[in-house]
Figure: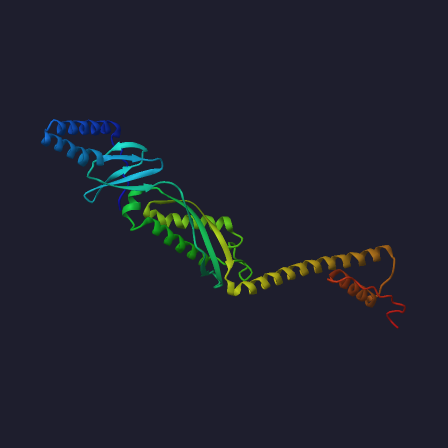
Length: 285
């Protein structure tokens, strides 16, 4: 595995002055019919001097190789001169966004879901990015998709079917993003890539089960609401009976209490407006 070696080559300004001097000298030699001297000066100028001049912009680097051997990486921005025989490959050090495609995968419980992620990454070690993998751009794309698939397989979408799940894809956004970032950092370290941030950008049930899952969620919400209403209604009925008994407003036998409880529960738990009924008789007639 290649380790990055940062080098700082000499300034290119003095070399550029030498280039201009050799250019002027070669033209002058040709003008005075010193063809051999002029040809040699111009040949050296355009073969050895000019090809070695490089401009390195901010947040860019130049990876240098000489006859198949890694020489070093220039990360300092500026104007430099390097060995003209080296092969110079530009590698950007800027942060980049990878907006992953929506992929269909099964969650921990086997439910088909659609998921996608956004990854912010940048090249940290240029030698690994250039020599450890074939194409580091494609490597980032494939490994990011593999990490998202693996993450979706080890967690359920929600805890409706797995109530013991402490982390879900739907509700554990921060934890899931942290785990995704850690896994991507491990996968991409081989290529010298640093993961700045990774987050889930899209999460939904697959189209073929989305309608059924929506009905299940609605039913769960209705059951939870009904449970809360019933608990509140029972408490209110209990309180009403206790207050009537404390103030001696009316004495109720078991049958009348049962009727009163039934009526109160209908009124409190019903989802429609109450229709009052005037009883002109008694419970016993």
